[in-house]
Length: 136
Picture 1 (cartoon, rainbow, N blue to C red):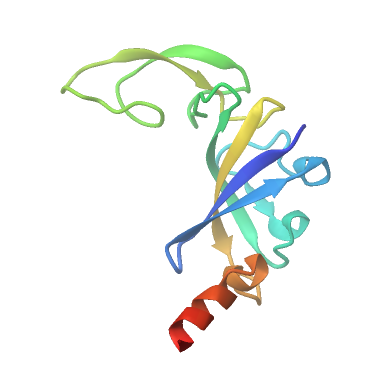
Picture 2: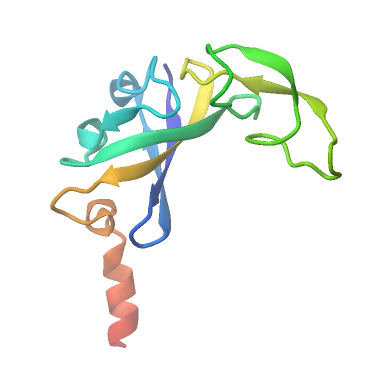
């Protein structure tokens, strides 16, 4: 699995953070499915637990939790992930990726379910600029 992005949502503060994971960290997510939880230790988040909520592949096709496997498939959808209904009752055939993370996935969306001792802003190194602005 090559390099990919992880969009990490922090529900306590309402913030989102973008991480880039290299080959060494990619093995943690390989073969996992949407809805599974992963330890954040491989990404530097010791004590954290991350829940996979979705993602997209290199072609921009979204992952769908109800579609098994890791391949792209054309499915008829009326609502849910990857489709916004414009008229009541309208259905469309859309190409979507299955719920399993494979080599073609370039972005993974995750949410923090269990927090560690340090805050996410401390780990990411984001809080320093905000404190300087508030002090001035």
